[in-house]
Figure (tube, rainbow, N blue to C red):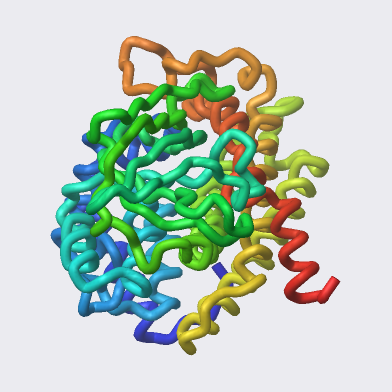
Length: 398
């Protein structure tokens, strides 16, 4: 990476690399490198290692158990983790809910929920999207009616990532039906083990059970689980999305994927020569690599602004658009590089089954499922079309 860091930041990079070399379990790294899916136990094992080192929530303030790192250190850590094939911690609690709690939550909520996140006692999922309320998030219809010390929740959430593993959900609910769409929404923490909760799997195009539908029928949640003020949840939801969209730039993931693509192109042959030597393919790779380099530079500008205490605005939308497009382009090139081996694939090959032999190149089984799975990137978290509207309104004043 051709980015300028201080001597102190380079020392930090070396420290991160030593930690990953010593502490990252080889079996986990090998599965990530091969594009195979990790099980819940493997993810929790790695998060426990990060927690013991104090690096599970590096972006949190030290007062709440964070590492106190600068924005540049967090950027370095993300990239080095990806390049070492370390799985990213599940973001819903640590990266998305936690900033909301730190800014808007009560002291009791911070003490209780943040501590449980660091100890790995909860697995969080996100309850935003609904049928008819995806990119148009203000159209949510799930209701929460207050009855004494509880809210009674009825409705449905969809595309709930890893909800099959979760015991907790941060959820947008409508607490005032007569208000305007962006008003009357509240931000509520819901125990998914409560009576009346049903989780149904959605099998995606790549054959994976990654997302779910979640149904609520007379589910009771304590009023103490309301974050901030009632009917002000839209403010908290927008604040959360700036963090989600900035992280979607995926600089580390794209850097690791680019390195993997180049290695793949050196192994694959075309007309008796490595595919990497083919002028047309090399030009395609170079074009995407230039875009990735530009994305890194833009991300570093955002990092510098964050160091000054600024909160990302339309920059988060810019990073989301370009970052997701770059990751899709890299996966498309990997599929092109594999050639005919990319057409047939078995979803079972993504699992840890030593009885199934890979097809051709060791990466071949993962190429097509990864390509199919990454089609979602430009849709979730607010589609890229919506992000362009945000940029046009906030920056161009259109």
